[in-house]
Length: 192
Length: 252
Image (cartoon, rainbow over all chains, first blue to last red; front, side, top):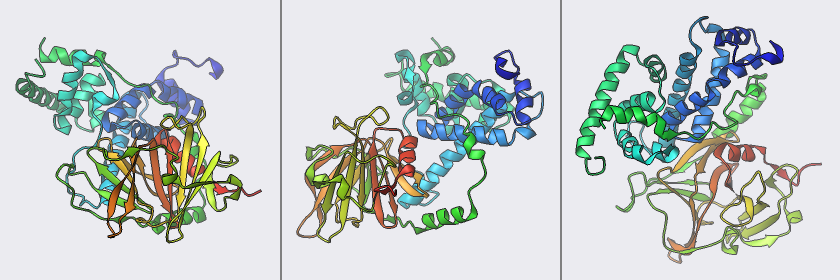
């Protein structure tokens, strides 16, 4: 393909080349999903530095495991699964490490010190209260809502990122929206 | 507008910061692994670090996260709000960094390779231990810290905690995070506050009038020596800076 490789080249072709060790093909392949991978890691970790680290590790692992990638499968959910997995690993390691250093038992629950999502993103004023309301929900609820409505992922991709069964995505989304609706009723003064 | 419609509109209403250039495949990481000896040395360095962890009772006004730890000569304290008492001082206040010394007089410190510091300061404590501070002017790669004309401040101290009386305060959130730097545990603090505490005659610490909002700070300890690197750069850039430090003057 030489220097003529462009967007007309399919993922499958790039994967085949990358599986044979073509680094340029792999760079092009992951480059197509770099922004989405970055957004996913940022939403899950809420730290640009950690998101960057998770992305770098995910890309490295994807390269190392590319040999086991099933030909003909979509690459995007496969990569997103690795990004989601690395982000969760990093988040857990960060919490464990922090507890160890400050001398808190592993099973202690500490307040989440992460910045709010609306502090990390540029948010139109009309949607700020909604994003903040989602942030106040339990982790499970807000993860699935962020994946669906902020990252705009499909069910299969949400399942990959959150490592849940595709059938669970719908029910979890439904429950999360109901909790959000209840919260909206309670917060009518700030969220008409 | 109902909730579902508002949720559907959300994706149009948020803008993410662009992915950093460095968030890409790092091919150099799949080059041949480091030697066994190197790995053993790195593991030994990790094992050599001792973090003294002490939990204290905190005033009600602080959050449950308000805890502190001593990292070598510096105490890192997580607080709800920065200390409001005290006078804001400059990054190179003599009370903090000591007296200026000639860069050429420096021995046995760490510095950026091939780049002599622009200024140096020495603070000698009552027990004879020393803190050396070297500074580099700001440039394109190293943004200015708090209108000081300085891009990097590196303090190297062999003093035990209590002698320096330096307290690094981090607000939570975002607070501080534990990082690996030069093979040991360190602490990365986003835009914190430095408080200088004086040793009162009765042995307790009292707040001195000296406080300062700081850039981002990376603190770690190697072989009993405490390092404090202050910069406006990102965490990964600060760690890269720390990793690149070499003995100064650079061996010829």
